[in-house]
Length: 232
Image 1: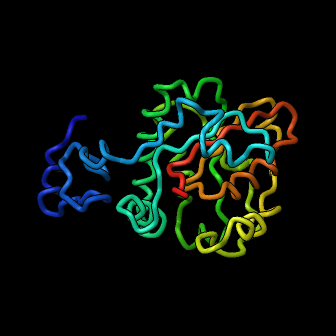
Image 2: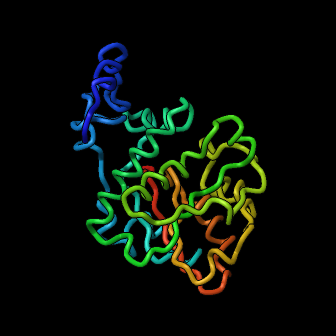
C-alpha cells in the first residue's frame, strides 16, 4: 500500500492508535496493529461451517447452510473495547477494516463460494439517527471490498427497537427480537444464497429473527457470518 507524504505528516502530528492495544499505528496499518491482528482470538469455524458451536445455535430453528464468526468475544476484553469503539465512538472505519480481515480469513476456506448477496442485519431508525451508520453494514462493505459481492440494504427492515440485548437472558433476547424484522423487497432475494452479516452473536436470537423473516422467500438459501461469537 502506497503511503503519501501527507498521510505521514498527519500521523506525525496526530498519531493514530490501535483500537485493541492503544499503541501507535504505523503508516501502513489501519485501525488495528499487525501484532494485535495476528493475536486476535480466531475461531477457525470457517473450516467446519455446518457444524461448529455457532452453527449449532440455529439447529432445529431456522434453515442455515453455514455459520461462522471470525473471533471469540469476551465482555470487558481488549477485543470488546474494539467493538465498543465501532458501535459507539463514531468509528465506522473499524467495521470496514474488520470486514476486510473477515473476508481474507474466510475465503481461504471457500466460505464465500456460492454466496450471491451480503445482507447486513438492519438497525432501527432510532439507532441509525444516534449512531449515523450501521456497524453490520460497515462490516459488509469491508467484506465486499475483498469479495466483490453486492451489499443489499433495502430488502430487510427492522420494524422497531425495544431495548438493547446486552443484559438480557437467552429467552428474553428471543422475545425482544421476535417479529422485529420484515421483508421490504423479496424479489432481490429470490433464488439467492444470502449471507447475513452481524457484529456479535451471543445467543443467535437476532440472526434467527432475520432468518425467520426471509426463510419463506422462494428459492432462498441462508448462511451467516459475524465478527465475534460470545464465549459461553
